[in-house]
Image 1 (cartoon, rainbow, N blue to C red):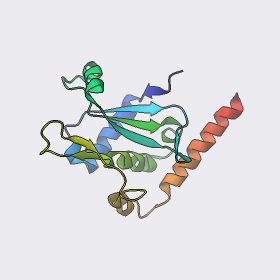
Image 2 (tube, rainbow, N blue to C red):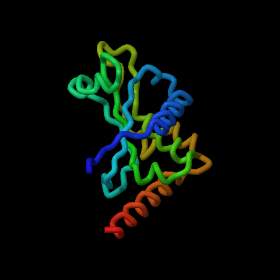
Image 3 (cartoon, one colour):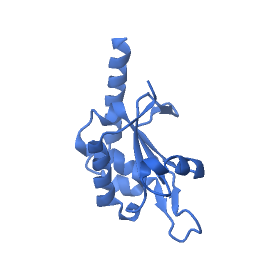
Image 4 (tube, one colour):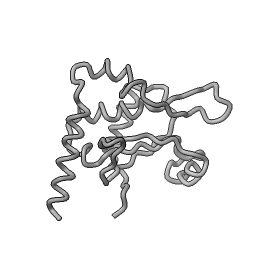
Length: 155
């Protein structure tokens, strides 16, 4: 089984809805959304999602899939174990966090799409938007870990 799989149209539409509501500057960005089906860790922590800016090769290879002469600008990876098992509010938080990594520089000479790192362990905007539930990511990690444990115990 491949590590990555395409998300459903429903998930893709959900991502587009969040992007439209919170990230108008990304309206013209082509974003491919994939599930990561394997447990990924970084610094000892479960990775719930990540954003990748495509390079010229990936843009070329994704022209047909993107239905665009330029291909995809970004690839968003979502942890399938977490995303498929949390509520819609946490899905919004996860998508919103990943989209915070996207940066648009319309004054750039070529490709205006860039990536940015965390301002802290998170983003200042996200801290404010999640002030009602600051521990949402811990809950999503717990869900993902329990799904991975169930999968391991089934084998």
